[in-house]
Amino acid sequence: MINKHKNEKPSLVKGLSSLDIKGLAGYIKNGYAKKILILTGAGISVKSGIPDFRSPGTGIYDNIKKYGMLEPDLLFNRAFIKNDPKPFFSLVKEFIDKEYEPTDAHYLSVLFKNKGLLMRYYTQNIDSLDLKAGLTPPYLIECHGHMRTSTCTNSSCKNKIPTESIKNIIIKGQIPYCKKCNSLIIPDVVMNDDDLPEEFFEQLDKDFHECDLLIVMGTSLQVEPFPGMIEDPPLNVPRVLINKEPVVTYVEELGEKNGRLVEISEDRLSQKFKFGHFFNRRDIFLGGDLQSNILELIKELGWEEDLNKLKSKQI
Image (tube, rainbow, N blue to C red):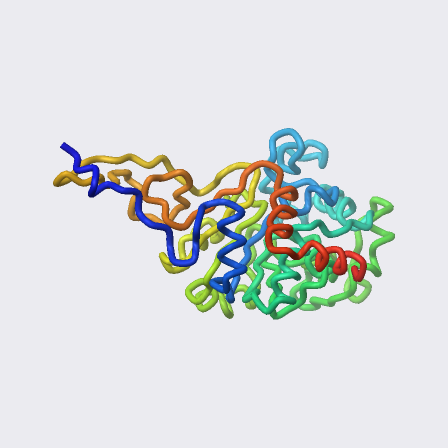
């Protein structure tokens, strides 16, 4: 027989009163979060008008035929682009042909920074909307690069120029070439076969081991090393996923040992998210509309006026 007294639900980590927005806001307002780490993906920019990559029906990869391709992985393949640059530059055109605006999700990190609470912000996005919202290095780490500059693909040249200087060429549907050597020149985004930028690794271990709150927003967490990164914070650090649906989680299985409930799931020793689990002490999932959840959190923190001031001072 299972001893009910021995199987009370475990207490939450210190400073966390509940696994919801009010609990998260309380953790921050009560001074437990002073080194906030944020990891974001394309989902935070969807409201800006930029499609994400993997959403069924609307994602870039789901509409890959639009770019004259059948294999989505080739869209960011350097060798393929050199051979046939048109599909890639069709995508680039969508990013630079319109002036996109930051969302509340972009401004949240700036609010944390202004309050002295942000340690680092790692984004997989290449749209520069975090920069436009007012977040700059060393807080901002653009893990997959950006489109503000472009570099010649000739290893002997590597001429770097502002992408603005070739914007008209790209918008006209033409392919830009280096003025120095006439080789293909492409925006400085990280391709599938590239290494991540040096700045990504410089503070990574330190950041994830010293943070006191991890917030993950708008990402499917399918591209390594990002899925594994959420497992790195200490076990007493709350982790928050603000996303349309849960990712990097598993189904909890419980058993009994010596009259006590124990977890017997194959993934029990991993540090994947434990949303809805009996033994969850720190993981918060805020599902549904991402921007609505962000705004609700900002209101719970009492920072709505600060948000409006940021928007009025937009770069």
